[in-house]
Length: 217
Image 1 (cartoon, one colour):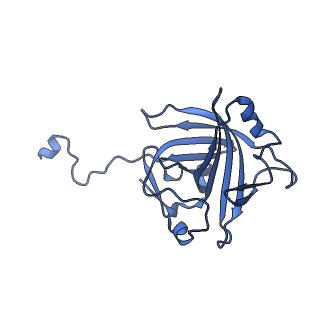
Image 2 (image 1 turned 120 degrees about the vertical axis):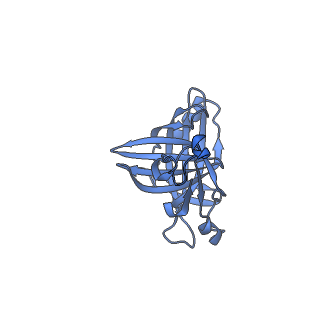
Image 3 (image 1 turned 90 degrees about the vertical axis):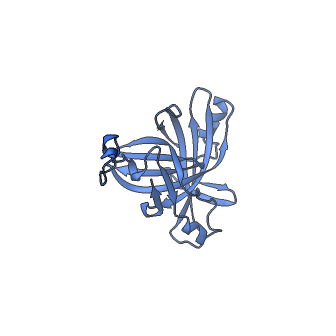
């Protein structure tokens, strides 16, 4: 009786429902990945997955048109999960880990990353001893392809870092993982324009995962 008088929940009373986003992720929640694939193949991948429960610190949203969205859930340990949805249904989930960042000092230096002389858009890239083939781009496989340009809106939990929008110029590469036929490792390279004089070029490594690989809270 006294518990009810002072606001304690009655036994059996349901807790408030948690609002979740694409793939079951939520800002302020946490995600852990089953690392069995990586432990069973310790030399196969060029990156390691984030360890343990990782707080979800930000959400990036990209509208590709036609009802297709990319949802990028950024976690504490320099990694992010990309959930692609069409008409609200999950098409795929990828895990990426940040592998390298370059900071162009000027707008002119940044612009060079999106021009035909740049590595960004070449048919193949070698990174950390592995060669990756370009996935995106029209035209001949041997020609340079312009990076894909799009905007990403990044939001944070209330009271946290201020929200912002940035422009990407991106290219996706892949290699088949040795010893794991049909399993690909991705190299995602993106030139990020935060404006007016704030630029990054970011290399991320990743692979496909499923909701069965993830534990979400």
